[in-house]
Length: 435
Ligand code: GUN
Ligand code: ZN
Image (cartoon, rainbow, N blue to C red; front, side, top):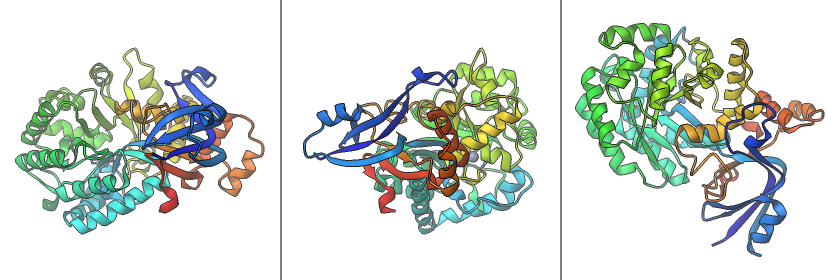
């Protein structure tokens, strides 16, 4: 099997950085080498040492002086919302009803779903995202298109057919039985095929009747290893309406807990307005709160207390995500730029190492997939990204006076976007080159 030796400045995290000078939390190799074979990293370290391990005929690609990081991970976005981005609405519920639900109705057509799926993966690669966790639409055809395209590109992707049986247009509703049957069919056809992972996906409590939540509970019992994704505590009006629909629950989180949906594979989008009791319940269950900063600011939903939730006595696990199309950028760099600003407004600091940890290993840990992705360790998937902190004239000018890795990362986060992504490798293959 041909080996590929990739040379560049390697940066990969070992754990969450405790402070800006926590140099033990990451590995940085100024002149590093990654040896790739069969889609897997087989060696990583100083270039000289890795070169010595490589076969004499290994292909060699030199990315110096750019940074090589594990592929970026996006833990929450909506694949059928590519044409919803930038829709002018006052708040979440107006945005859903006016733009999002009508647009998602179009995914009943498998040709439309297949076309958008192609664009979707092109954008992921363009932005350096090698794994994402997506909501498809209610239509099984949308999940088929999503996973078929992931398989073609060899990407490790998580996704699910949305279940929703009320409070949306007729063209966007299933029934408790249909939601159950079609989710089972998607699992049977796609889970474990290539690198695909199927997630159990009730949209949120507002669009699922208690009968559908019972069926979701059954799926969670039958497939305990699958991810579960839904939305939680995003907007005050949403929280109030949810309380009306589930009067017996003590709070929003308790609804999901009652149906067995609160566990270590559960990903809850937003979680902006959790009470202390809800944060305790999330922490005890090991559930993940997924922060979507560009979406939260765009829809005016609120300021997610990322730092406060992570330093609690009972800390809440955290993921970060774009939330396309409530979110306004496909870029995880832009996402962390906005996350940084939200913490500023809350009087907190989010240092650049924490940000890059979250985009890579942090999100891999949030997905319980760090044995495969989110690092440059030997034995993991060869998904990585090449970043150029001098990608634009304005960035290059700032780089002239940038002296440290800390400052370079902060510049990438603050000014970077898809232009800073030189190349995106999926299972050892350079994908951007062939877009
Ligand atoms: N809550 C339920 N559905 C959605 C959605 O599509 N986007 C966002 N941001 N929140 C939701
Ligand atoms: Zn969402």
